[in-house]
Image 1 (cartoon, one colour):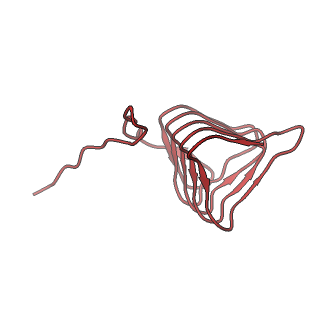
Image 2 (cartoon, one colour; image 1 turned 45 degrees about the vertical axis):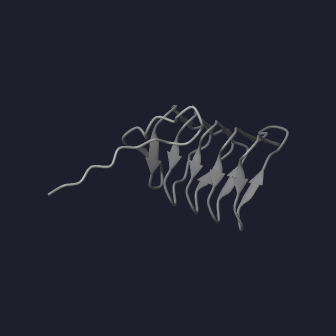
Image 3 (spheres, rainbow, N blue to C red; image 1 turned 180 degrees about the vertical axis):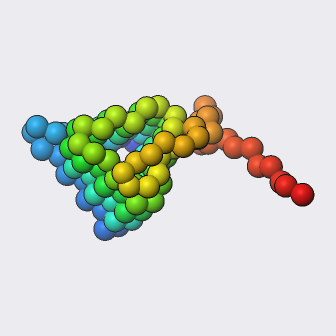
Length: 112
């Protein structure tokens, strides 16, 4: 199992790797509370919502967001720069582009 710099696993979460399905977590990735990760590869700048379940063989690209309670099927691939929600995971709009400092920039609009 490897977890890169500036990544965090919050309380009551489990990250488990096996020889058949090792775990790899990129930089600046945050796991919410009560997440279960079993043998997944997760890219950089990822946000994993509370209660998310990632099954063995899941591969998650860079700069993505998994909403609260999202679950993945075995060996599921999540493309780069997308947000996913619900269980099983369904795609929605791409998240904002990460900036050079690793923080996300986003536009805020106000409706009348």
